[in-house]
Length: 308
Ligand code: MEV
Picture 1 (cartoon, helix red, strand yellow):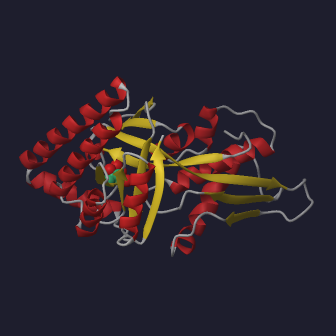
Picture 2 (picture 1 turned 180 degrees about the horizontal axis):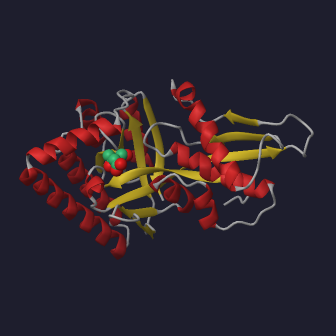
Picture 3 (picture 1 turned 90 degrees about the horizontal axis):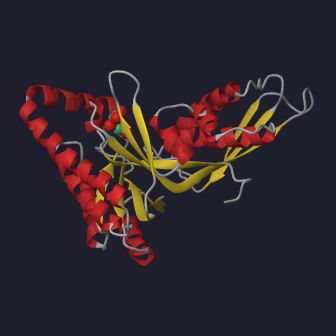
């Protein structure tokens, strides 16, 4: 890998959205698609002071206007971590790379990680991965964005637990956006209400989910090529469980079915649901191409990448 590339990876929830709210473990997968930052610093008191962030990432309709403020704010937090005051020394950040900043892909964390790497390099600081991760601190996403691979994540009464894992093989995927963004607070609130009304129903689904999770964890431990097929089957099962939990929707189900009809080994929604993203696991590049083509006819945005 080119050391001059200051990358922050995107992520998708592989298994466990919603169940993770009630302290069940989840697996979060970093994708190969990444944001790459370039940073230029002015000398003290020469060219303009202040912070400029140029966004040259793949365009998502409507995204830039909505998120521009957040992008500046999160960049400021990274500057602060490095004790850099952009009122004294001009900072210009250019965000590039192949990660499209769609909701659910961890774009904000990928920005922070890539900016932290570029800034450390511009300042001539030798920082380790843990410090990059701290500089980019936002939640689960930054850890996946910094270290790559797969992350086991679990909320507890105290600090959340993180466990870094490596996949034995890359998993080619296509992911697509429904173009709809549901409110996580609302969807999580709705699940909470349903769970309170019918605990037995919820516990049944949680038990099914834990079978999926345990099988996924075991597949990683066992390693080998078979993992791609196993993950695909588990993705199918996890999607069905999320349908029963009522967090999928017609648009997501259509994309999942379209991907499977086009030859994907498995597919599921990822994240909050009722809109947002889905991903499809493919056997190889040819299948990935066919699945992407099929999804392009139905989804406003489609991307090819891999779990790494
Ligand atoms: C949203 O990306 C993931 C949820 O499980 C909510 C959460 O864990 O905060 C739906």
